[in-house]
Length: 353
Image (cartoon, rainbow, N blue to C red; front, side):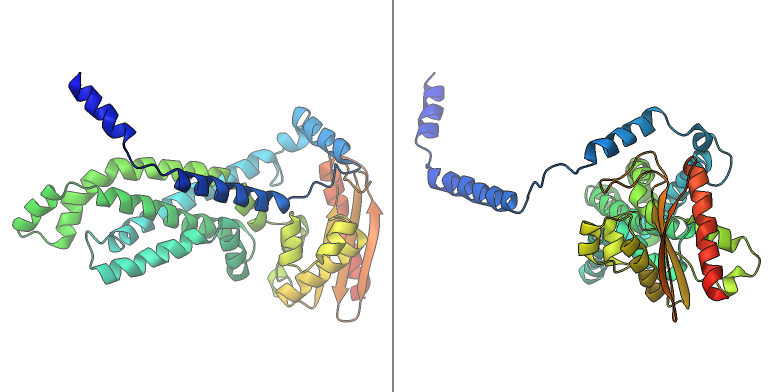
């Protein structure tokens, strides 16, 4: 009982830091107020309810032709491609992360060497996957290969960090025994480190694979486009066709292809002026003689600017021409896409005569 009273007395006589707690609360309140001041609510868009309804019904009643299509545009093929990219990216990243983590561990390597490789890992982890995708799309062009490289690099960053943490928690007595036996650095890694790391390696790789599967942003950026696919079906197309850009988000339209933000805000992503600037932007980006760009609504719903499903704007630009036109197509998503590709190619041929 006396012991408990002593504990209570010490607890009651502890230094009071109410001023510190007050300061922390004040700083947190200040940060929250500052953050809230930068968020402005402008109300719901005029067609916002209609768009949300269209998205909901698209999930409830999907396009069965697209869902069970056996073509390269069908959901089964695209799902399989996504899984393959995730598997390759995870395996390559997991394998390369192993030697990098050893080189970055101060427990194994000299501190200067470990510092250099830790800085490399930090650089990889600092850039998000979408930025790595945009970097590599300039090198390899759009396609699954760019997705594999992007997933591999991002996997190296995360997996290496987790490997290094696991290495720091190793049982050093085993390494000391191997060292006393005259084992080389390779033998210590092979017989003293790898067996201890194996469970962590397996769990980390599985976790990273789950992340890569869900990393849909990267796959959206590095996928192949419909017009590009139509062009590249012709033998020898690589001599005249440089590439293409899929820009689903306004961020890509504005920051990669140079569409002015005020146009996106005033006219929307689906508009005549946006199509014109998209063609200009992709031509400048790829340093091409001519470029064609499309933006439209294939379904299931319209947009907040009142455009209905099937509305498509196509822009074209070369050294002598700059053109943008509005089209209205009918049919399901696949039909609208096919009509858009045909119209875009006809527009190109019209200006190339």
